[in-house]
Length: 215
Image 1 (spheres, one colour):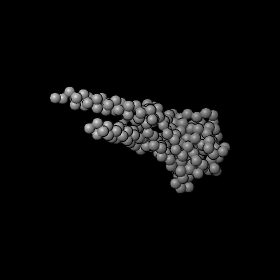
Image 2 (cartoon, rainbow, N blue to C red; image 1 turned 45 degrees about the vertical axis):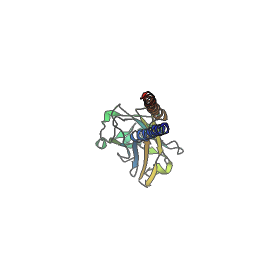
Image 3 (spheres, rainbow, N blue to C red; image 1 turned 120 degrees about the vertical axis):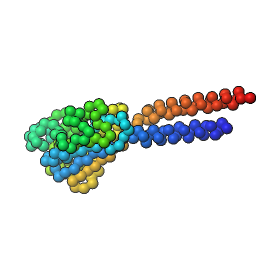
């Protein structure tokens, strides 16, 4: 009887762990699509494909430092629209407003570009696109497919303080895509299993006392 009970507890813990991991998984994709990051107003895109209700993205970033001398061009001179920052493609916003998105970078030729989102704004099904000139990423002009060839890194941070990264892969000469799957931190899963284990142990203990005191 005791062996069967322990086996049931083990099965409960394992099923809870896998169910928790699967249900808490968030899937985000990013793409670079177009002939030239300098001219295409919708060159960069990010989509929150799937996730739990109540899960929101805090920030996403693009890191081009892996490729020598590559950088984003925000000096206002021969950059996209002669802009000093990324330019949102407003008609392409889905579930987000322009005021929900803010870009962060250092200097006029940064190698890291981050988009931050207002709390509770970037949820499942939402997406946005924008333009930002990229220089010396393999070659100029920079078509979408070069981001995969150069190994550009895309990172996601959730408001639950965990995140993940992925590397762009070239789909065609005009497009690169990356898919990032964000799952809970080990500490969160451990905490859940500890709680379930305590409940299971309490049930087992009550069962033993009931058996011993039965006439």
